[in-house]
Image (tube, rainbow, N blue to C red):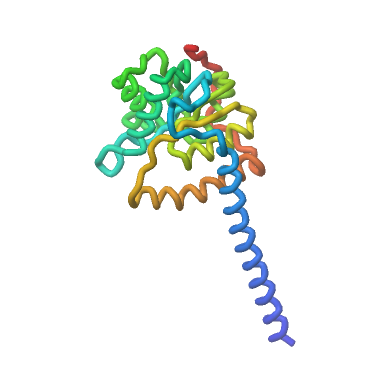
Length: 220
């Protein structure tokens, strides 16, 4: 009798484990599909093809990675500059992390864009863009943006498009040039989990940005 109870208990545990595994794989698939569909027909590879919008939202990343220039950073700057030259936006928000005195993604992006010809007065820094969710929600709630061009690599733009859609922000995207190699493989794995977190933040956790603050005016 005791052995039978133990066996049944183990069978239940195994069943629950398998059910949890199936649920996890389904959530990975569903969240990935949700982001992909959100970006469908809204993301463009050429600046000339992007519909006009109020603001270009450039997502931050480190300027230097592992002692060398970060290609993700470089290509996002190139995309933003191309968008400006094509006359598609009136100004930019450069949104990223500024968690330490010597680490300032927004300022690095602004400096790089100014160096390539974008007027400094047309670039506003959002120093509280700690996550993609924070950057997107703050663009609408803090900066009053109604229509935006998302500027990052395609995989990132898809996730940002889902977040924008969830808060009623009209968004299209300009895909910065992709990056290959080991870095791309790491980001692909990380992105799967980021999309699950995206879906949970919107549909279950109802996550807000870490920082809100007062509304800011854009140079439109």
